[in-house]
Length: 112
Image (cartoon, rainbow, N blue to C red; front, side, top):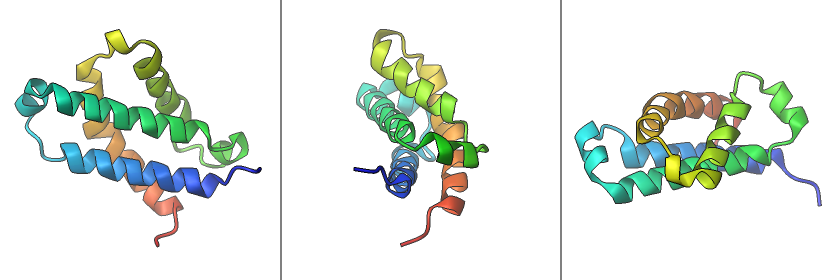
């Protein structure tokens, strides 16, 4: 069965939107005090990286403006080095990188 890059790109866009919904406008102190929120955001970033890893190499090359290695690398870090996830880095990814990625994906993924 052939993978459909569009499905994975759409899933990535949906996941970025979920992340922004959970964390957008959230005060830093609330994030720091809410372990459940930290785990939810880490999981969503992990899901984002997993979807990215399923996009074909050809399509990734075509979409070179997306930092594929960083997205997939973050997923690997959360999954394989879960005891050393830096919550500062997670906060930065969620508030800086995810909105930029959402904007880029919105230009690629056809609206429903």
